[in-house]
Amino acid sequence: MNSQPKNMVGTTACNYDERCRSEFTSLQSRVNHLFVDINISCPYGLPYVSTFHQATFAPLSERAMELFLAAGYRRNGNCLYNMSCQDCSACIPIRLHPAEFSANRNQKRALTKNRDVQKALLPLQSTEEDYMLCEKFLQARYPKETNTATGYYRDFFFNSIVNSAQLQYRVNDRLIGTAIIDIGYNWLNAVYFYFDPEESRRSLGTYNILCLIDLCREWEIEFLYLGYFIQSVPAMSYKGNFYPHYLLVGDTWVNKER
Image (tube, rainbow, N blue to C red; front, side, top):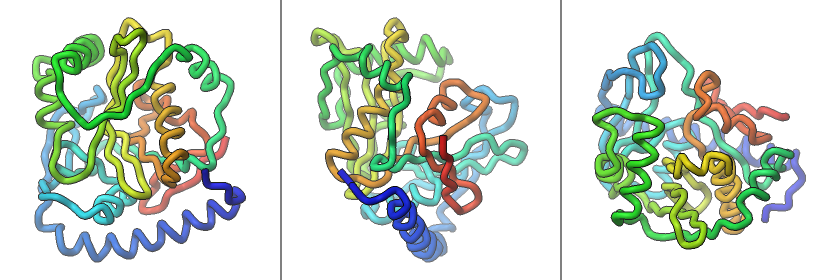
């Protein structure tokens, strides 16, 4: 685990971000022509048109993916995108620095509630069990005709541009949750998490992030990207309960203390 003093960690991160911004400017100039804007209804239920500024890529170097993540981009299958919505700016990229994190009382409670959970880090796969749980989650939380487990795995989770895996959670050998993650040398990207809606009392969303933090600490990974923080959407706003966290404001990651 990184044992640098907190102020030293912050200074190191600032220098890291400056290097990333400089490198990304060069990278962006070479790939800008690949990006297009796709307009759809807001996937988070907000009353606005969402504009995905996205491009499809062949396999990326680990450093290129790191630069995209540090610039606020997300992965969807082989596409990388950011949000360029004209009438809304609610989607704010959020990341954690696991070495700095300290669990609060509610998060410690979530760990206690899940003491009986067994974890397994596995290659990204798609078994009937995976499909059934993902389908159950989608029908309970996002019941749209176009939202299917088969579609999510085929178009969203599986990819050929980065190294991906899944972290499974089981109780008495029964699958209750799965985190889809991308893994780099110095970063971990939380792509998606689905779980059994009947297990909502366990606070599995919170528990999953705590497990990802532990994984980063074990592997000495400095940056954990959690996707978007959306204050008005409970399924996204809970990420802001992890302190300290960092929000991408403009092109700067801003530290949000407790």
